[in-house]
Length: 391
Image 1: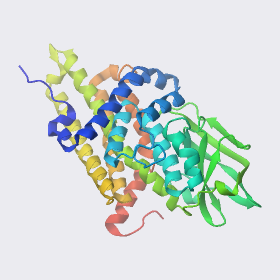
Image 2 (image 1 turned 120 degrees about the vertical axis):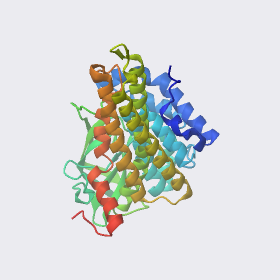
Image 3 (image 1 turned 45 degrees about the horizontal axis):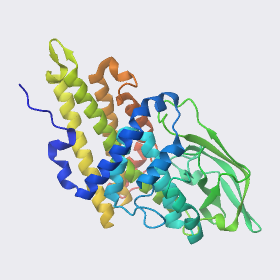
Image 4 (image 1 turned 90 degrees about the vertical axis):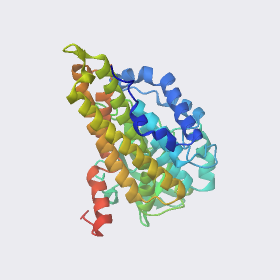
């Protein structure tokens, strides 16, 4: 007769590393997702139809949007608390964490870090409440890992800027009220605050996705979009602006990937205990236990890495290279765990009845957005050797 099974993160008493407030924030987000998202995720994923505004308003009321920012209606929580929220969001679906990452760590953070007082006052309170949706336009069809090769241009025309170009793979793009668009200017790359009702701005949904289906993805186009002089973000020039925003978003992924991995492992354990073959649960076979053990080890290590980086971020000691280490390791391990969990579920694992293949498909996107594995590998390689291998 065996002992009662232990939940994955309980193997190393990981909760003892969190404060009571951090555990309560995690539990609050988990309960909200259990009530408002999990019952619908399979349908949203299958039909590619996420109710972004409804979800954003609910998460805004919960205080999750821009929760790591101070003022302007933002919750002002710690980096660890934000990371734990991302972990719960991605344990439900990567599309939900992407919505929050783009809203809070890309669009809102760009305004918070580099915007004028007027820009912040105009947009941040409504975005924190989920009343306004933001998107972030950096990636282009021909400029992904190398954003310096972007073709989108903004030129000054009297008291206005005129924006032309396009952006691709933009989360929240078709529902956004405001877009933070990065464009080449005579002074270098600048960010622009673009209300999506501006003439010449169009957003087209990206269809036929096999990943991140519970997420709004768009191609944005700008045809002589005229913007007032004060549309530019005054606080930064050059790639430092968008890259610092990406570092913020990548931090959320470090925690989020742990959530996806944990959900896959928990599903595999529950299934293995319930599924009987040859007269006993498949959890009682050595090969199945080896799979579960190997996955559990990686979940523990990934969580410890995420938590360590969160504590460093809260102390002001984190670096972009550290975030690259977390993103590269945790997403890679989460994807392996999702695939391995699917093997334990057998044929049942390929349906939307269980989340593991949905997580695996989503993580294929997470692996390559916010910096591909190759990019993060070279960032870490540069830190180790001092040599730049990008060119």
